[in-house]
Picture 1 (cartoon, one colour):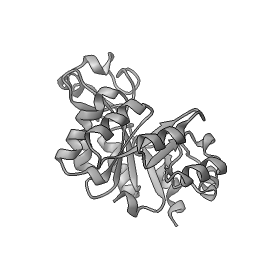
Picture 2 (cartoon, rainbow, N blue to C red):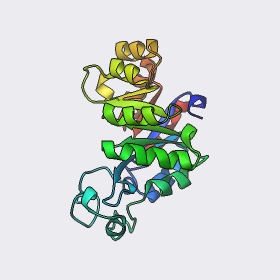
Picture 3 (cartoon, rainbow, N blue to C red):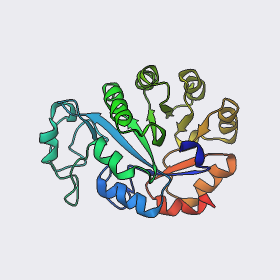
Length: 230
């Protein structure tokens, strides 16, 4: 399924410019818009459940306070993540996107790698999910446990993102958009890697990235990016 998409419009944390980020509401809005992929962030609750939230704490995105890793799923379920939305589990998001879009699962902590992989494998969605992370260790855990998993390395500094991704066996690199120069994109392509920069909300910047050869773009405003699919 990943191979079928020519240019990825990726909804960053769902359609997060319009709905509470990383919620089912945000994911559904992205699907309604027609995004090719939805990106979400995954951590583990205290009782080992892959849950969808970006930060280490719940303070910014919910009406609660505390560290995600120290709260059980029941604790997290009691919180309001905006407009009455709860913190979803990865399983709930998988159910929502199945057959409708690719899911980019960003592993925020290494410990979330194998529980997330096993869940994706159990529901038969390996070909509909791209596991992404800043952590090479998290991606290595996924690759070691499942050769058929799709992985991509996110990076914010120009160091060895592309070379490191190739060594890991990645299919994608996801650079901060300012690092996605024409030269860098061409180098990644020579290494057999597809390039999806993040996070871009204005169409002209995204058009320039596509002109340079980018294979997609992650945006909080996926509706604005839809003309790029033409």
